Length: 234
Image (cartoon, rainbow, N blue to C red; front, side, top):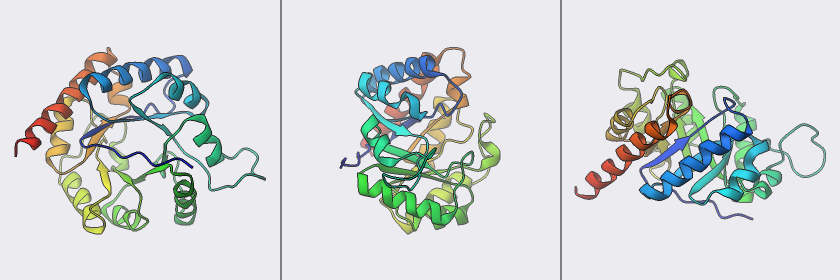
């Protein structure tokens, strides 16, 4: 069994979803790994299942993360994703209940327990404040709080969603790390969510759609490092 990784805060999430094929996903992973080592910042990097082995084999500084799994055990389950297969492929974490792959409460709970059995870190998504409170009761290690309407838009919530949902999770369990990343496209965006209480940030389209991945990632890493230094002087 794996030992679930522990993330240092603030941290970055790079989540290519299904935007990239294998070669480009690996290219992004290698670049992110290089910068993670350079800036000494922890990074969650998600991948399609088919690419996990190669990314885990060729990177050092990433928490290699599957984008979903099913609560099955070895045996029957044709077409489903076996948790043991992900762990053996090199994943040390899994994202669950994303808006693009929602789960019932029963499915989510069962899948999280399977992840716990294998030492896979659970990163669970929720939308509204009420959903955030409910998911926090299931004791994930990390939560992604994001309003579905802002995902992939390049536009962040302009109200108090970030502070409110982060606070809701921390009231249930202060040890749960909270990611706020919906609509994040720059280092300035990352600084904003960290200042409102989030433990980590990052994105998908804000990175993938950028003309130069290195430029946008360096901007994000710089913001994380700057916040880290400021917080350390408080």
